[in-house]
Length: 128
Picture (cartoon, helix red, strand yellow):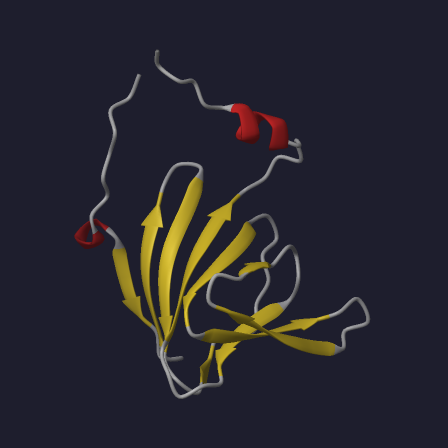
């Protein structure tokens, strides 16, 4: 059994993007977690992921989520603190349209198409 591991902030890859986002990337063999800070009145680039499943947990502020629907029409909605955005395979971008810094955690992994809900719900063994 592997020991517990703590990955410190200084072990992450820190990037300050020209778009007004700061990111700390924590990249592992089968997943990635990154912490984002998006500055007021800035937007990320439009993009999509071919294989990555991306899920975003807003931890501070709110985020304007824009995406193209099945007909290529731009849609938008807001996500706020403690909301989770499931990106799926959408063409999307995120924007901070407020006067405050928005922070969120991104969980990224490559799914294999197997439903693992029961495994995830039940994978805990208690010691007696």
